Amino acid sequence: MKVFEKQSNVFKILSEAISEGILVVNKEQTIVATNGSADEIFGYDRDELIGKSLNILIPQKYHHNHGAHFKSFINKAERRNMGRGRDIFGVRKDGSEFPLEAGLNPFTIYDNEYVMALVIDISERKEQEQKIQELNTQLEQKIALRTKELHQTIEELKEEVKLRVEAEAKAKESLQKERDLNELKTKFLSLVSHEFKTPLSGILTSTTLIGKYTKTDQQAKRDKHLDTIKNKVKYLDNILTDFLSVERLDSGKVNYKFSTFPLSKVINEVVYDANMLLKDGQRINYPANIDDYIIEFDEKILELILTNLIGNAIKYSPEHTIISLNVNVENKEYVFEIIDEGIGIPEEEQKFIFNRYFRAENALLDQGTGIGLNIVKSHLENLGGSITFTSKESKGTTFKVLIPITNNHQND
Image (tube, rainbow, N blue to C red; front, top):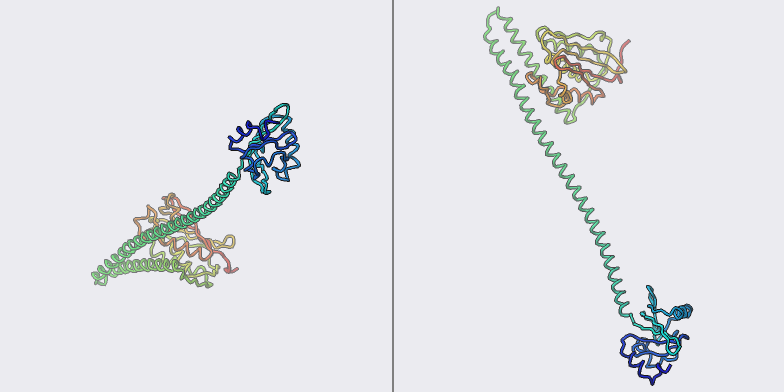
């Protein structure tokens, strides 16, 4: 024990040379020696701690466990750091607690067991760690906020890109529609120019020739050219009617007028006019057993539909062929079939046949605007009907028109 007495210079010389606080306790946990650093750390005067229990330097809440830990440590007699992964605290003379680190070293002198503790006040380090932790927390919060803002910005950019893509698509669509419209206008002007020029030239020629036939016995020649003029005028009238129909369909200004009339009335008129267009040797098979059919429909539209289909059958069929018109009632629908023995429609072009201004490759040398079938289909769809066809090139075509018998009736 004399080695730790005040008069002994050995411990004092050794301990005061160390910056850490040194506490030496015996196995009864009584403090037997300190250095100046330890006194200063715990706030005591020089040698004031000598003879006092170690518990005065340990927070009250840890007293109940500390005795057992100390005995276990003495028995094992090994060096170690106190705490081992957990924070430990000391108590100053003024009662304030502070964090510390302590390294324990057991030793024996003159058969007496002691423990030397190297103590470091880590208050400043803990404050710095706390500040670092707070800064890290703030940084994490800022990162989270910035990430959220960045995510929001990305979403806004995605939405803006989406809107721009949609706007681009609409612009392209509008541009394409404008190009298509310009193309349609070009085709229209070309068609009008061609389709009007040919019959007008024929009218002019026939008119000129009529003026040369002044004698009475030349009446047959005059009649021939008068018939030509009538046919050309009729053709021009049909073209104008088609163009007016297109304009009304596009503008939605079509007013359908339903009335009740004998089906034979319309068919007689259509076939009569069509007979004027027949080529040499052509004839039209008139439908059988239609005298009793009374139909409720738009008379002018039905006439337009049948005139267009029979006119096409005549135009695209060679001489000495038959055009058949059949009318039946099936499944509460009127079924009209127009059958020809003409040039037919090429299989690869059949899907375009109802497109406006479309004309099949094998029909380009014949007069036509390419809008008739489009008009027929549009009217039928507006009125709840439909049109289909079967065709084989060089063998002929059959168009089938279906008109519902809703509000229609057949006399018994």
